Image (cartoon, rainbow, N blue to C red; front, side):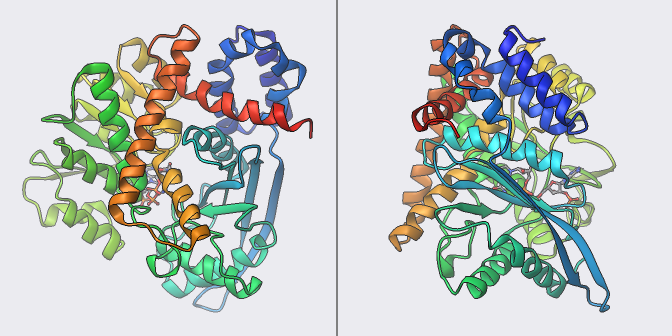
Length: 447
Ligand code: NDP
């Protein structure tokens, strides 16, 4: 599968070490395959064991999280932080609370984060953390006690110049608030140690919207540069109904598209008249409810229990729920319905064979590392505001986000062109991120 002996050897050694880490190996394989043209032209990368160092996290922290539920029963979960690479800045990456969380999933997310953060052009290394705690159905008090217990261990390992976590699946503003409060209490220090904070205590405007808005800006730029087109009058299919999905749908609508689906892990809503986002926000953000509640208020919509949004015909597909949600059958449905562009809002939502099928069919495929980098980009801007102790306006921050996303498109295309890969956004994004991190590692010596 690999063209270079070096990439093949490193992949095989990584797989031999932990063959059960399937998500992690999937992410490593994608990056190694993409950077082979760089390896072939730069033998110093192999001489300096750059790949071997990149696939091994700097540090892996695993810990017990014991907390008491509302019935007084002691519950025990597992907490993790994978600090992957800090060659270009403090470790940076979200925290995920979901029952599926394990070392393989967090390692894949941490590994991807390294190259994503490099693509933003800001000084941020890569990390990811989380727990197998399931916040669904938990009371506010239980979520608070869990967050406090989680931070009671994590606080030893993080800091505003060391490692700066943020939200991810199951970790939004409420959880970041509880985590930040506990850090402040334990350290007696008010600092920008987490991003995604409330606006009253060091948060940044646009952070909530950033991943979804950034996805919209990125997609708009790709449509403009590569297809001389726009969102105008396009049918857009969005999966998920969390933070990324809601604001991706909002930006796609603002840019002229018609979003016709949203989903959660139980099923999806299809509203041919266009999703009513105020209603979705009421259900998901205010009531923490389920997408199935949507149809009670919208006669134009149908709810498909257990279905996947990819069966609905569209021009633009924005997967914004979770990893591996577009499988080969879904890719084939999308191709059949005439999809023109798939832009990943979630991390690694498309399986490798689905990516191959989409690309072979001429669908423009935008890898999450690039297209969903808006969230961490505004987290980087939040760190800058925290250091200055000066908040920026919405317009200032949004304009900076937009320029970072268009720069990511440009630098991905430039990297692809440099290695004779035409306008390959997928290879280009991986190469551009990789080159920045590799250059910093080479400059800083062996460790
Ligand atoms: P949220 O927890 O806010 O929302 C997640 C959404 O995805 C929910 O609608 C959830 O439904 C659905 N979902 C989760 N797991 C599954 C599953 N196994 N099958 C089907 N649906 C599922 O998370 P975010 O919106 O923050 O994150 C979504 C994706 O975007 C993730 O891949 C994340 O890593 C990525 N991302 C997030 C960033 C951010 O800034 N938040 C930044 C960059 C990437 P349900 O409620 O039923 O679980």
